[in-house]
Amino acid sequence: MNLHALKDHPRLLLKATLQPLQGSRFQPTGFPDLGAATYDGPDGRKMLLVESAQSMANRLEAVCWDTVANDWVTPLKGLPIVKVKDKTGQPITNSILEAHRLNSIYITKANGFEAIKSAISFDDKRAFNRDTLIRALLKYDPNSLLHGIFLEKIAGVIRLPRALTSFIEAEGVSTVASGGVKNDRVRAAKGDDGKSAKEGFGNVPFHREEFTGSISLYFNLDLALIRGFGLDDASTTLLITLGLFKIQKFLRDGLRLRTACDLEVTGDLVVQRPAGFNIPPLAELEEALPALVKAASSGFANPTTTDLTYED
Image (cartoon, rainbow, N blue to C red; front, side):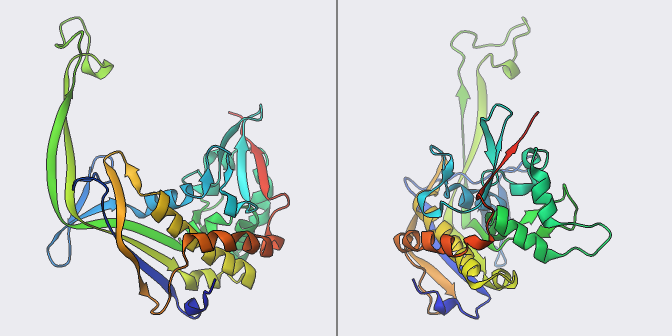
């Protein structure tokens, strides 16, 4: 696997063109009290945010996780992770699946988190030392070095930006308004007996909004940020390769975003920057990762799985 073409370049920028797997309609992400995020592009074209950066971070993490085995997918085994169990030893969650990673309340309030907090070594009487945070994340949760962290439950200054960012947007969109009704075969009309639609009684009509348009998926891997972590070559190469793996794995396995948003890539994944770089195929990345994980393991916790106990 050759990453030489990335040397000295600050960003890896990628773009993929997507289309619905069937038909022409798709359902974007929705936001509370907002719904679909439509906006006007610089040229006046109607635009739509199909998937946000924060949602894509979660999806790029999800393709790394084997839900049946409750472990990393095979090429990533040996990477550090923080797992949380209840007092009976049953799994609750982990730092990969939690949207806020180590800042999850189930992690920061769990027994055993003090060791992680100590490794970060925050002192409110001194300027924050980012290097100790970076090495603590490499030790306990290197995934956070790619997707960012905001450990405001310790202190508001403990943060890193995302090194791997992605989003999906569509242009030239048109709204497809439709709807339906939830039928109640027993009590179609709500009477005076206090039975309400809120409880689930009666026929309930609903509105549905989908879209058509040209869909594009973007990835931005911040190479300058990763190199700026000041880690050794093995750890730096691991993080870059892990980012490439997440991208390729998502493109293969992660494009069913919702029931009504099942997408596929059309054409090739385009490298916008740097010129001359070809992203390795998924099989090549899977083959390379176990050796890269081993090469960087001197910076990992031992054992690599940190078990915490959350008692509600």
